[in-house]
Amino acid sequence: GMNQNHLGLIVAIASALVFGLYPPTLRAVYADGGSAFLMIVVTTWMRMLGLVLYCRATGAPLFQTRENVKHAFIGSLFQTASIFGILLALLYMPGPLVLIIMFSHTMMLLLFMAWRGDVKLDAVSVIATAAAFLGLTLVLDIWHPQKTTYWIGAALAFMAALATMGRAYLYGKLTQNRKPITVGAEVFIFVSLFTLPALFIQTPHLPASTAGYIYALVSCLSLTLGTFGIFYGISLIGPFRWSLFLKLEPIFTALFSIMIFGKFLKLSQYIGMAVVLISLAGYQIVMQKRQA
Image (cartoon, rainbow, N blue to C red; front, top):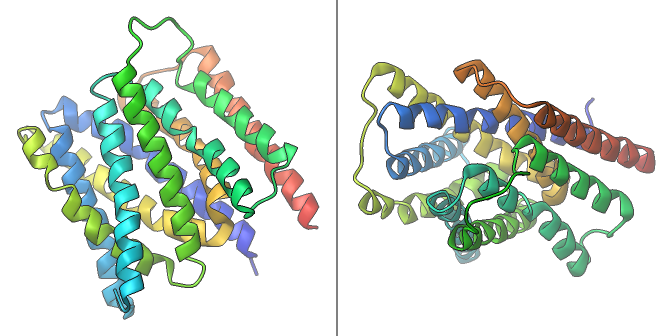
């Protein structure tokens, strides 16, 4: 009896939750000696295998037409650019700044979809997006002087944001007429191949202890489950609303960091969480009233 919007909202929040587990567990893998570029390859292949095995189990065929191959190839370019853009940007600037630039893709997506005529650019959407973004700047604690300008890192993070916008929009179009997980499996078959060169960028290092392997497994599972949520969620509520509610991810990341590392936050960061939650709740309430 649950309608599509409510189900999509639940999928989006659940996906933000499992994605939020990824950064702190990955940090634990790094602390145990695991290398970043190796983890990118491993997690990407795990995501691909999860999607493909699901398609095999449900009898969903892959690459039935040339159009399917073309769309999967284009989607994989966006996905790969997003992955490498974030990873390489982290070599030049702090993680919180990279994430803030990357999360600007929601406003980019809103403006692009309005330009394309897919959504109406109204005050509620703009204010909710801007307020949630401001809240994230507090959660990620970027309001303090930086030693350098990090131009290379900023350019790479901006590339990742554009790629994330592009992939979300494309996934929204592709999942309107096809099974979401089929689209995802086709895309990630290409992505898994495109990420293999990462093994030659940095010498692969495995974790040094059993705990490191456990954290690596949790990292893989969190990304794999979240990837299922991406395609299902976008198919249910569209790319913009999906992107907007994914802004809950840094909040869950902060909470998991407290649980795993005992790292508590500043008061301003908790205020930022409240701003994000109020913005998203307000947006959802207004949208429900409009639909009613």
